[in-house]
Amino acid sequence: MKPLVEPRQGNPDDNIPALLEAASGGDQSAWREIVAMYARRVYALIRSRCGSHDVAEEVTQSVFVTVATKLSSGQYTELGRFEPWLFRVAVNRARDEQRRLRRHAAPVDPATFSASRDEREPEDPDAPHQIEKLRDALSRLGDDDREVIELRHHAGLSFRQMADLLEQPIGTLLARHHRALRKLRDMMTAEPASHGGNR
Amino acid sequence: MSTDRNDNPERRFSTTVNDAHRNESADRSAKMTPELHRISDALDRDAARMRADLPGTFEDRVALATTPRAEQPPPELAGIAGALDALGRSERAAAPADLEQSVVLASGAALRRKGAAGVAGRLIGAPLRLAAAIALVATVGLLWYAVSSTRPGASTPRDDGSKAVLLASIDHDIDELFDTMEHELRYGYVDDLLADTAAFSRLLASDWSMRAALYEVDEP
Image 1 (cartoon, rainbow over the protein chains, first blue to last red):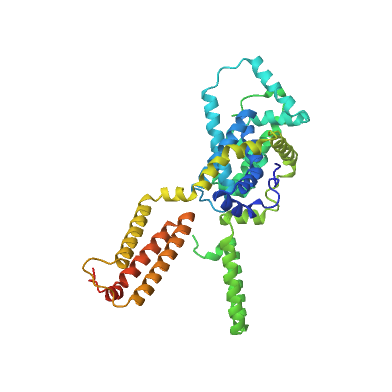
Image 2 (cartoon, rainbow over the protein chains, first blue to last red; image 1 turned 90 degrees about the horizontal axis):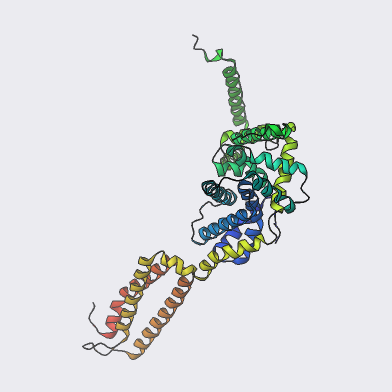
């Protein structure tokens, strides 16, 4: 099942109201279509935030269970704003998961840490070195900056959708995005020795 | 401190523009026929409606309208933005091949519960209204039964033919009522169900006099 629509291309919202109406009436094929449109985008957002592939898959499933439950019980009231609503659910779930992971985080042996980082390589063998470096830089970005970057580039939301989701003016989000891009660019050009907590 | 509003160059400019606009509008109004005036007003209203329908705040719209390709990062950040797009694509592509299937498997049940018990779900949400509907239906049934059966103490109907026609029409009405109810129950239209049963109940009550005359029974 491939995503039907690339993020930020075309206007998937055109078809969404009909699909949502059908899905909320129990139409499984409409629901499958919605999942095909958004599952990978939700997954990418959560994986970037939580790091783990397994956690990302589990949380993605949980997000869609929530959405299906709300749709079927008539609790979805954000007519015409499905994407911001869906990603708000995803962001909140990712935050919950992050909090949970932090609560249960045990001190990690540096050797284990580097081994776990190495485990990522086989998953994405074609990823250029720059991508890995960027992923690393992103993980060191502050939460607010990271949120804007992930919503924009991983979830593929437009600034208008992000404004709906975060309840901030578009101008503010553009400024936040530019600021986060600058920080990332600076991290990417900085010496590796300068890696420090940027949170 | 001067109070002359024209002291402020910005305000003076704004005043000049407004004055010019007013003069232009006045000129336009003076030259327009009533028909053109109506068209102009309609266009103004339409434009105002379109402006009002635009999403976002006024400041957002101004920012987007006045910043060419505002969503595009500035050239010096285009490289990092492009790399982030590539990272996003990479993360989406790194999802397991069966992600969609597993999500549908996990979440479809929530939808199926609704699909299978959509009506029940809505009815459970309104147990009191359902009880009221059942009570109404029972009342209608009892009324119908009371009308159609021979009651002790009641006289024989004057005209068997009229009675047969009346009973047939009530039977027909009852059938229609139950068909409608079945449809309304199936799709969970509890409010419609209540309204229909209440309407039918009122119809029976209002027809009581006629039936009482036919059956020669006392009015309740």
